[in-house]
Length: 185
Ligand SMILES: C[S@@+](CC[C@H](N)C(=O)[O-])C[C@H]1O[C@@H](n2cnc3c(N)ncnc32)[C@H](O)[C@@H]1O
Image 1 (cartoon, rainbow, N blue to C red):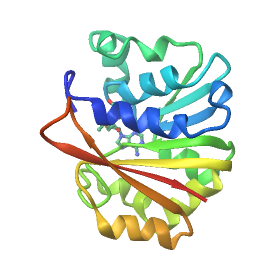
Image 2: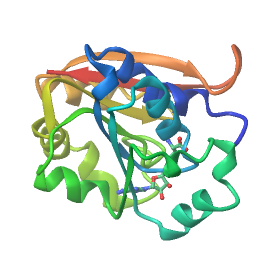
Image 3: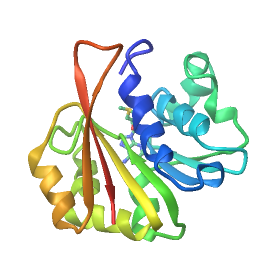
């Protein structure tokens, strides 16, 4: 991810929302905020009655987005449809108090290339199953990864999900590609 190479982060937000029957009033959970590109793409792909919760673990990331970095993604935290959860997205999935039309996860390099071992659970069968429980009927789980991962794709399918794998350029129409899985019940 960089300020210029964020097409796959944009796609993580846009692709699942484009599959919804009623994107204008979608309820979306994003983990994490990063530079806000996925959040901005969700806001652009939904409508005035959408509600978007973005969970971010690192307080400094939130502060940077509210300040110096915010203009790169168009200040999506300031959008009235956005609610910030300053904490671990796993907390929201474990308690499943709300149901979402889309859950879009980009908290690390990918399912097997974790920089934080605390995120293991999100990509485990238990984490996937909790995310499924947090979806509304017809809802979509979307996962971002720096690289393809056949083991994770199989795990999603073995949880009973119908999975589409997308390979998306990081920028423009050549060079590095990243992987996005769209999974629905
Ligand atoms: C690769 S960045 C996300 C990029 C984002 N898609 C964008 O458009 O800029 C990963 C972010 O997830 C945050 N993060 C890592 N683990 C998390 C967790 N368990 N819950 C919430 N946020 C987390 C990191 O602090 C970082 O800001």
